[in-house]
Image (cartoon, rainbow, N blue to C red; front, side):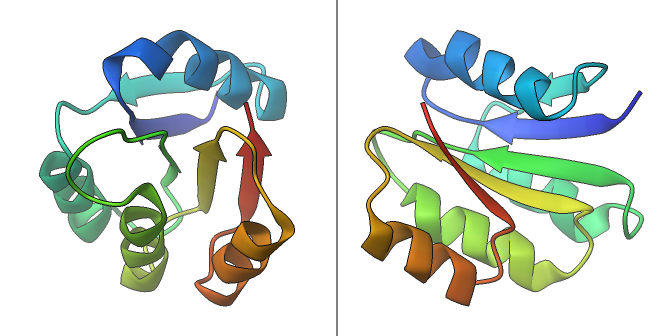
Length: 105
């Protein structure tokens, strides 16, 4: 079983959970209550221990920027951006930011 941490708008939690399980069927998922909490988790995680899924985030921090910051921290096993209507431009930007996977919900 792999450990995952996620942050998204409340209405997307079910979709994001299903998306994680499409990548990792035995995932253990912890949902953070804020972008700041998810970021703290990434900064303090043992390298390679946690995978992170960000988005969709409808208010506050940009989901792409949050995922990029987590990727930049260097501790994540994997960083996934979950979004509606992922464009080629978004996928390219995510790849340049070190985000491992973009999932179109």
